[in-house]
Amino acid sequence: MREFHSVDAVRAAEAPLLASLPEGTLMRRAAHGLARVAAAELVRTRGGVAGRRVLALVGSGDNGGDVLFAGALLRRRGAAVTAVLMRPERAHPAGLADLRAAGGVAVAAADVLAGRVRGSAAAAGPDLVLDGIVGISGRPGLRPDAAELVARIDTEPQRPVFVAADLPSGVDPQTGATDGPAVRADVTVAFGARKLVHVLGARWCGRVEEVPIGLALGAPELRQCDDADAGRAWPVPGADDDKYTGGVTGVAAGSGTYPGAAVLCAGAAVAATSAMVRYAGTAREAVLAAWPEVIATDTVAEAGRVQAWAVGPGMGLDDEAEERLRTVLGADVPAVVDADALTLLARHPGWVRERTAPTVLTPHEGEFARLAGGPVPADRLAAVRALAADLGATVLLKGNVTLISAPGGDAYAEHSGHAWAATAGSGDVLTGIIGALLSAGLDPAFACAAAARVHSTAAGIAARGAGAVSGERAGAPVSASAVLACVRAAVRAVRAVRAVRG
Image (cartoon, rainbow, N blue to C red; front, top):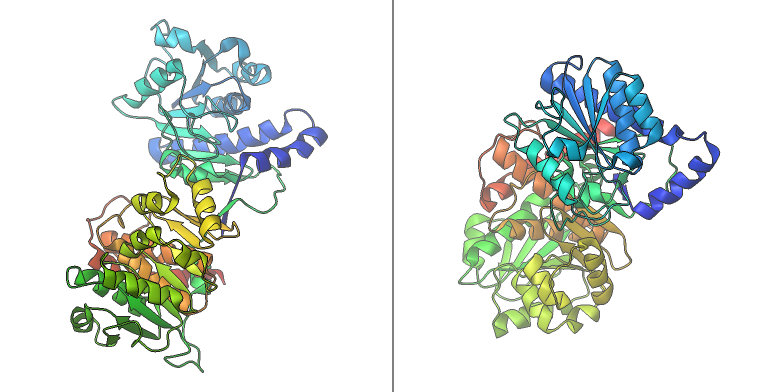
C-alpha cells in the first residue's frame, strides 16, 4: 500500500530530526538521494554521467540547497554542472560553496534570460535539469522569470530530463493543482515520504522515487492500493463455497435506449468474481444474449436475494427508473450508485442519507457537481471527503486521478500512469466490478480502491497486451468492451503479484 502524507505531517516529522541532528544533515541526505536518482537517469538516457551537462534551477528555499549539494556530487562524478540562481542573494550559502568547490558554475537567472551567459549548460542544451525552484511550502504557479526560463528549456531541440527535488515547482503541494506555469518533471524525488502532490499532481510529477532521510510518520492522509493489496484481498471461491456464498450481485442498469450499459455492468460483475449475478431491468434480452449465466427479471422486486446492488448505468431518468432506484436503496444491502442514478439521487439526497447499509457513489465531475451543488474545486480530496461526510456514503470521484473517501475520512487514490480507461462505457464496467466486491463483503472504500486498480490494469492490458511492460507508451485505443474482456486477465495479474509477495 502506497502512503501519501500532508505537508504539515512531513514538517512535524522533520522537526525533531532538525533539532537533534547536526545542521544540514537532512539536506545532505536528500541531496545524496537526489544525485543518485539523477545519475541513474543520465546513465539510462545519455549513457553515463561524465561529460554530461546538468543544469540546476535554484530557488531560495531548502530545495535550492538540495539541488546545489546534489549538483556538487554530480560534478565530482564528471558532469558539467551549472546552477542558475533565481535569487542569487538568497541562494543557500553552504550549498553554493560546495558546488563551487567541486568545480561547478553558478550564474544569475537574470543574466541567463538576458543572454549574457555563454559556454555553460545554461546556454548550451543541458542533458538533465534539477528542479529546485520551489519546495513544499510553495504556492501553485511559477514567477514570470522562472516560467520563462523553464519554457525556454522545454523547447530545446532535445528536451532534457527534468528531475524535481521533492515536487515539481509551480504545483500545489497539497492539492496537486496549478493555476499557471509549472515544471513537468520526468522524475520526482520524494524526500522521506510521498506527499499528497505525488498522486494528486501525478501528471506533473512523472515517476516518483522515494529516498529515505529518517522521517518517522504516522497515519497517512491518503493511500493507494497496489497490485499486491488488490490481489491479496480479491475474493476467490474456497473449498466450501457455492454459488451463493461467493456473493450474489444484483444489477439494475440499462434501458431500451441504452441496453449496452446493462451488458457492460452485468458482464463486469460476472467477470470480477461474483458467484451469481441477478439482472433486473428492461434490457434483459441483451444481457442474456451476452451473458447467459445471468439470472434476469424485469423488476428489482422479482430479482430475489442479493448481497449487493449495482444501479444506474444507462437506466434513464424517467419515473420507472426513479422507482427502480428507490427500491434498490430501500433494500438493506450495500449498493453502488452510478450514472443516471446519481442524477436521480441529486433530486432525492435523503434516499442515501437515510440508509443504514453501505452506499458507494461513483460520479464523474458533472455528476459530482449535481450532488454537491457546485463544481469540483482545486482541492479535489477535500471536496470528496466533504461530500462523503454529508451524504454518509463512500464517494469515488472519477478522473485521471480517481479519489475515494469513506464517510469517516479514510481515503484512497488510484493513478495508473495511463488513460486507456478514458472511454465511453468504461465507468459501467467499474460499477459492475465494485458491485461484485461489495457482494463479497469487502469494505466499501477498499472495494472501490481494489476495483479501480483492476479496472485500470484491465484497460492497460487491453491497450498494450498481456505481456507489455506497464510503463511503455506503445498501445492501441480501446473500447469499454475491450476493457471488460480483460477484467479476468487483470484479476489474474494482481493475484500473481500477491502470490509472489505473499
